[in-house]
Image (cartoon, rainbow, N blue to C red; front, side, top):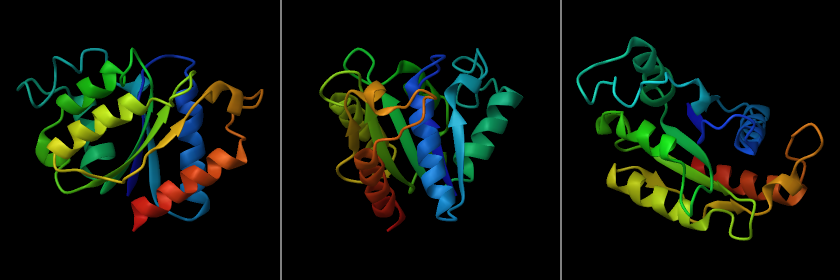
Length: 173
């Protein structure tokens, strides 16, 4: 099972659109995948979770469905202040490290500017490697992401879709 993590809780973000494209690419190839939208996290998950000894049943159910059962992840992360969103880091921190150990991840960075969240994907790679998650080399960094979406908010750039497909193939190796 592959879990795609839409790495922001910001409403109206293009991150969810790109995450949906990843889900479409995987399911069209008959690969078992699911999408976790971090907007759906309980508001107090940072303080109520298993790591801090105050489990929240809603958050525990999310972890069970989207992390524990997954053997691979695709993190789609927008650039926030030269890095990746704090909610994504807080989500990772609120989960027992054993739930990540030995798994594999691919990263897709997004930015409105020219770098495609290069720093954020580097930072997240370091965090995941610390948790013993193997990361696929050479993440896809999508620059000027809003310009690659159509009026309905769907990713339509063929070049970008091809780059994501190649990343997913390496994730499945």
